[in-house]
Image 1 (cartoon, rainbow, N blue to C red):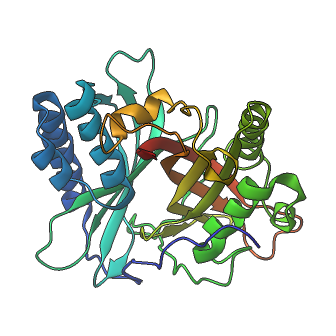
Image 2: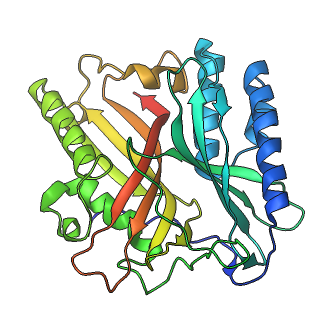
Image 3: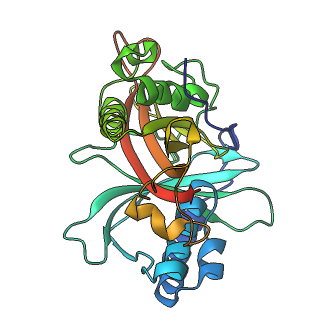
Length: 317
């Protein structure tokens, strides 16, 4: 199976303890909204990057890099009423999820957004570790909660699911890399973040071939933590991040005419003088949410219901 697995799990041991209370989660969430907006408004990269980690750090770092290189403003948002999913857990790391309508300033309408906050160890600060938007029209599945309202967290090695959460990313990546012909397609539903993403990359590759260039892409794992919550049907909601690496090059990397750098990546070049006489490398950071059905479900498939990817680094030489 092609496609690399996501990084090792980094979640607290699921249990019945309340290491994180709803009151603490609300406080962390509100503090993030206040400080992140102030940082974006002031263009303060130091403060802005202190509030984020993992995939969200990659995205925020790219935004502040673009601010420095081209003056592109860091996005700011307005938020609706949040819904908190706080797992019953003990020890560290600790985490919780927020589902909230979010609208970028200037955007016509809000989108249903999932945000995961984490705290790695005692004494560490809470950070926003991941954000992604549900696909249009997609509803969040019902999350299992105890009688006290706390969600049920799962180990990323849980065997009661179609796929253990720690191989969800690799299985999806195989479809993105190889398309419907991949053996992994037997357990992954078609959609915007699977077969459609493959079709998009394949079409772009064909266009580059027509220009005498070679284009390759590979979705691969990242060392970001993965998170899983039990759904009421016995399945799981799995949250994870991945990288998409692409290369556009002259055959055999010969020196030839300059390969255009995609506009979204120009602000992210290490130096504005970089020119792709040999090749152009572009990296995306993606954050996904998938519904992983129970192992007992007949003919069920993994369904990726949220996928947000943005350019986070580029290089030309």
